[in-house]
Amino acid sequence: MPSQAMLDALALLRDRQRAAADAPPPTLADLRAGFTPAGVVHPIPDDVRVREASAGVVAAWRWLRTDRRADPRSMAVAGDSAGGGLAVALMVAIRDAGDTEPAAGVLMSPTVDLTGSGRSMTERVDQDPISTPVLLARLAADYLAGADARTPLASPLFAPLDGLPPLLVQVGTADLLLSDSERLAEAATAAGVEVRLEVGEGLPHVYPLMLGTPEAAEATDRAGSFLRDRMP
Image (cartoon, rainbow, N blue to C red; front, side, top):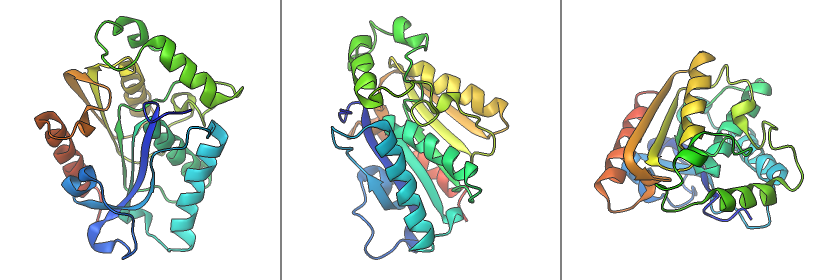
């Protein structure tokens, strides 16, 4: 735990023209969006817990900023599922450290509330083809390893969200975690953050990564446009 179903990916993206020669191989989504990874956490090993995962992504960011002298304005943070939650936690940590935020964040079905308190956890049970409330609760408990589920490291929905960069949030209606995206978008907007929420009717968890489908292609195209509009 967490398995790839719970914590899929978090990527630090850079404008392709500015990417290092030894950057990790790009994924299909990166290529469609027109960016290349400067660093990727994917997949997270099954035995990693919330504190280790959070510390790892913060360390990756610091390495890029100090060792590679990367300009945050030419970078974005992207994540799906619990990787999306890690992306939000990373941006909160960057703000709290007084560092310059990345140019933008792209979040696909982000898991931002490990308390499981969203309405969709009950309202979408018959529509989600991937997850069940019992499965998500078990994965969350394993990942937390006794930590408070409301800690911002685990559930960044409960963190102050002011000062974060522009966010694109993509989620489907056939997703138990739909409410995570909706509440994140609402809270971030209320905190003064620029947020674009895209809700795909009838689409499942992390639908932008359903390779070979028109819905995924359109979603990643929109993500690329969103990033290009916000990165110099």
